[in-house]
Figure 1 (cartoon, rainbow, N blue to C red):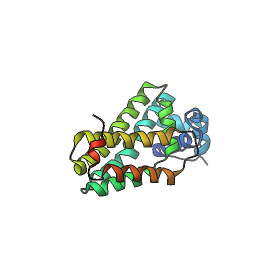
Figure 2 (figure 1 turned 60 degrees about the horizontal axis):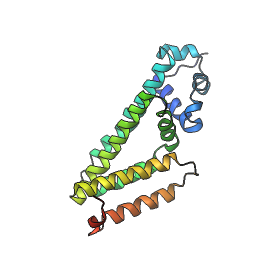
Figure 3 (figure 1 turned 120 degrees about the vertical axis):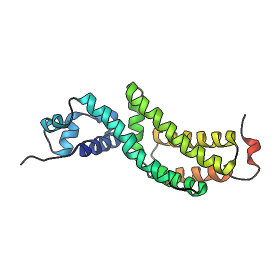
Figure 4 (figure 1 turned 90 degrees about the vertical axis):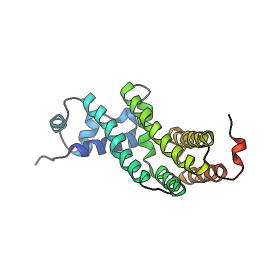
Length: 187
């Protein structure tokens, strides 16, 4: 009996492969093998591999990120929103994010998606920080620092230490929100 899977299952499996094997491991045979289907099943949903990969990264951005953004934007307290950003950031599938970022270095369409993701992340942190700090430059530096820290964590080849990332982020937040710290922000 043939296995029937959904488009969503193909996307979920693609993201799992990116997390497990990186961009180089994302192959049609691997996707089908993990789903227990034939390539004919794949072509029932997708015209070709390029269509699938393009839709995969769009799904990754809009599906996974969109849900998180909506949840964060519903939080009106900026301090709580920053806490939620940290919590969500720690729980991201960092291996998959790292693989997509690597993939973006060779595929302009994927790069465009990563650029959009970085802007979404920046905007969320910036607006939360601005509501607390009341200074655009300070909020800008805070948001950039948070993004640099997260992307560095995703790209670094050292073993991932979520406890260390949690500590670093909380130190950054504590220092940035200390009264009188605005004098240390570069122009």
